[in-house]
Length: 274
Image (cartoon, rainbow, N blue to C red; front, side, top):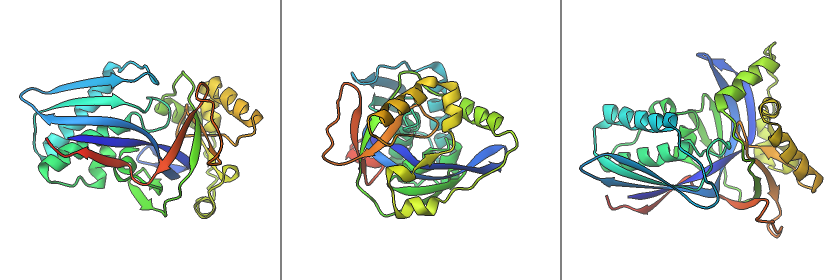
């Protein structure tokens, strides 16, 4: 089975409080045409292989392998075991706030679920990562609480310009820094509804930008460069990717930036054979 899992951008990210020691959020997210392709086959021995293209040459550290194996083990414990070989072709970078860490997990779990004829519940998906419930659903959505509340919105096609700094941001570190610079914990709830009604570059926001700037000055410099070139830049997730909504006819210098489109669904089944 071959499954494509598309990346995402956060059009809006509002930190609304904490629950069980974790940050609660209110977000608007949409899938983009960058994707990971995950091939899962029944096999006599378990095996995971990563393949990288020319765009993103990255190493997969041991912690990420452990995270993948834990996700697979959790599925086996809840829904039953399958011995599979897994090949992951990366098209979404890690550590960019585009869902690059969640996409392989989502693709593997989707394939295993189809093999078993089950539909994982939202709490199981949330246990694998805060982005996983949304990435599993996909589309233009409002996502809230810890990430398990996913509300589908009417799809809006957009063209985006992406700038991805080479240095990455650790999500946990970004939220820790957010807490440090918001030590009084005054939550200023922003109006997500207004963005849903009218998605424009000027209306978007991300509460984590200031924290990310403190951890990685390359993000702020990238945003300044885009702004100086007439774009409305915003950071996705906890960074480091910066994006701007652009007109369909806008030409993009592919040596500096990546051009992508929004897509209606987060997952596409390319081949159903096991």
